[in-house]
Image 1 (spheres, one colour):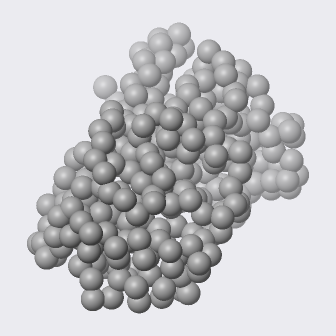
Image 2 (tube, rainbow, N blue to C red):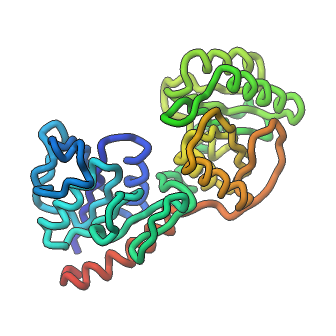
Length: 325
C-alpha cells in the first residue's frame, strides 16, 4: 500500500505552519510544505472572493499543481483559496482540513479544527482547548537526554521560562520585564530554583538586557540564540514552566507536559486571548505568575493526538466513500 500524501498549506507564518505540521506528524505523515502567495484579487479578498480559485496561487509561492495530495492541511486566510481549488480539482478525493475558523461555511471543508474560544460549531468542526503543536513526550525526552549534561549545574526545582513579547494585541514593557525578572530571581533564593530561560525575537533587545542583568550570577541559563534551540530540552527537564501570555502555541505546548504552568500577564490583550487563558485558569491547568511556586497536577493537553485520531477516522471513511480504500 502506498503511503498517504499530505500537503501543509500556509503563508509561512511559523506558529500556524507548525500546528499543521504537528497534526501531519501525529497522523504518521511526512508533509510537503506549500507556502503560498496569492495573486490579486484573491490575496486581498479571500475567503470572500471564490471565483476561479484554481488560478489564485501566484508565482511568488510554492507551486500548486497535480498530483493532488490525499490530505491537505491548511491554515490562515491565504490557504483557503488553495484548499477550495484542490478539493474541487481532485473531485473531492483530497481530504481537506482547515486549522482555525475559515470565516466561511464549514461545508467547504472535510474537517475544521478550532480552539474553543472561537464560536464556529458544526458536525465537521473539532473544538480544542488550545493550539495544535509538534511537542510529544518522545521529543521532550530525547532533547532532555541530550541537554542534561549542559544543564546539570542547575539546581531543582528547575523552571523553564518561555518569554515572548510584543504582538498585535500584547506589549511586553520594560516595567513588566523588570518585575518578572525580579520574581524569577527571588525564586532562586526562596526555593533554590534553577532557571532555564529562552527569549524570542519578539522579546526585544532592551527587555532581554533587563532579564540578563537581573539574572546574572544566579543559577540560570538564558539562551543566547546560538546553536541548537534548547526549547524542547527546557520543557523536558523542567519541574514547572513560566510562559508569557502572548502565544497560544507556547502556552499549549507548556500545558502538554502535565507540569505546573504559570502565565505572565502582559499589557493589552483581546477577547479571544482572554477567553483562552481564563479557560485554562478555570480548568486548573494554569495559574497567573505572581512569584510563588506550588505544585499541582492535571491531565496533560494532548489535543494534537486526539485530533489526529479523529481526523484519521474521518479520513478512512472519506476514502471508502470515494473508492480509494
